[in-house]
Image 1 (cartoon, rainbow, N blue to C red):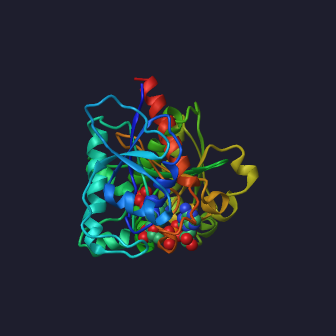
Image 2 (image 1 turned 90 degrees about the horizontal axis):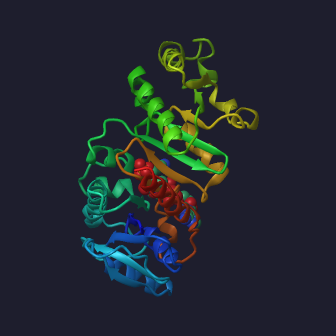
Amino acid sequence: MTLRIAITPGEPAGIGPDLLIKLAQKAWSEQLVAVADAALLTQRAAELGLSIKVLPFDPEAVATPAPAGAIYCLQVDLGAPVVAGQLDENNGRYVLDTLRIASEKNMDNTFAAVVTGPVHKGIINRAGIAFSGHTEYFALQSNTSHVVMMLATEGLRVALVTTHIPLEYVSRAITTERLSKVARILHQDLQQKFGIAEPRILVCGLNPHAGEDGHLGREEIDTIRPALEALNREGMHFIGPLPADTLFQAKYLENADAVLAMYHDQGLPVLKYKGFGNSVNITLGLPFIRTSVDHGTALDLAGTGNVDVGSFDLAIREAIKLATEKAQNT
Ligand SMILES: NC(=O)C1=CN([C@@H]2O[C@H](COP(=O)(O)OP(=O)(O)OC[C@H]3O[C@@H](n4cnc5c(N)ncnc54)[C@H](O)[C@@H]3O)[C@@H](O)[C@H]2O)C=CC1
Ligand SMILES: NCC(=O)COP(=O)(O)O
């Protein structure tokens, strides 16, 4: 059976459309459907000197992969004409519409997964719409109280306890409840989605040197250690809290399936240093499969053709893999 995969190219002035057009130059085994404005795709393809045939998506038709050089499109109208590299708040609503439609059509099973291109969080907020990221948006859309952001590259998976919040709120956000829920989702998805029978998960402390016995902060003693001990009493295998500055070395990572970091810039710079352009962002705990790129909108490169498709390619392949396994198990 051919799977249908929704693709949201993200910010129209960014590199998302370019990457999708480049990736559509080859044939895919599944039906990729851009949830986007068709005119944007043809315009950007012309700017890149590439040809793209945009085929209207018909949910009633038998799912068929597009040939090389073509892509199916579920039409969403832009709010304003697009100039590559130039943000326009009049397209903030358009970006959100593509995400809303993609999530609705994943929840009603029209699609087997969604792969998202990069959005610009700032311009969506400037358009008057509060938005902190796809992860939080899809959680809200699907009425899911807790989801987990995990990025993966060859040899390293990093999941986050907190995502897109200002650093000054991080400590208060790390409660026993949140940490336990995030840890359980991570543990469960490593088992169910990644086939790891008994996941070993390294957990970062929050403070320098994991608090140095309370002399450099008490979150490890008051919250993190008790939460991990309770989970381990149930038979899970969380190791920590460990000092984040020394945790990321081969002798620890070789025996671990994932690292759980307390906040965005504690874990992701390490992951991206190891595998930028070759990593995938996967949202765990959602009722549907969602993968994404490891990079942002790269406005400086939009329309130039000088872009690395590696992460978008990987995100699509990972979504297909997860969706195939899900279809086989249901
Ligand atoms: N999945 C998503 O929606 C993400 C969105 N963002 C958003 O992107 C915007 C810009 O963020 P930045 O921190 O500037 O990160 P960025 O990833 O857009 O750019 C950082 C640097 O990497 C380069 N770069 C990024 N992707 C590339 C690619 N595929 N090929 C070649 N070079 C590439 C850029 O040219 C730039 O020099 C922000 O609004 C941020 O919120 C950032 C990360 C993920
Ligand atoms: N650094 C990851 C990022 O900003 C992407 O987040 P999301 O939009 O996938 O929630």
